[in-house]
Image (cartoon, rainbow, N blue to C red; front, side, top):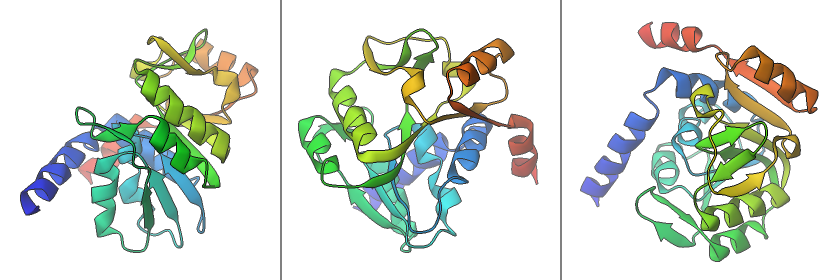
Length: 206
């Protein structure tokens, strides 16, 4: 068990080590208030939010990501709920109908949506149909949905649609997103929050 936890923590540390991800995660975490129930989608950017929640009080984190769960062992002030469901060992997460059913019983204040592919014409997409099901369940259960995705994933598309960008309440990405894309996203009525990668690099060096 200790070896498994050590391996999980090592993987988690690698995930949150990217300055771009840290910048986006830190900005996203700023929208989490005391007493909230939030959903952290499976993915390294959402995983990176965890250390920035250490000062929050009475927060409940719901997730389908096993790395998020194990990292939260170090934060006893945060209540943790795992969705269960079909295990995807390659991503350290779970998905499918059982996971989606768990979310149907929970009222979420904020859903942090993760993706490896997003674009203006095609919206948020994913290569796995099982992942669509849990993402849509979280979207339905949440009062607000924020996409967390850095600019390197923009203008890429996967097989299955999760949601068009206008379905989101906000997008948290980095300031290297092209200016014309920023204008078009704001034109959809979606709040856009841009993280400074240089600020994150400076903080890491300090």
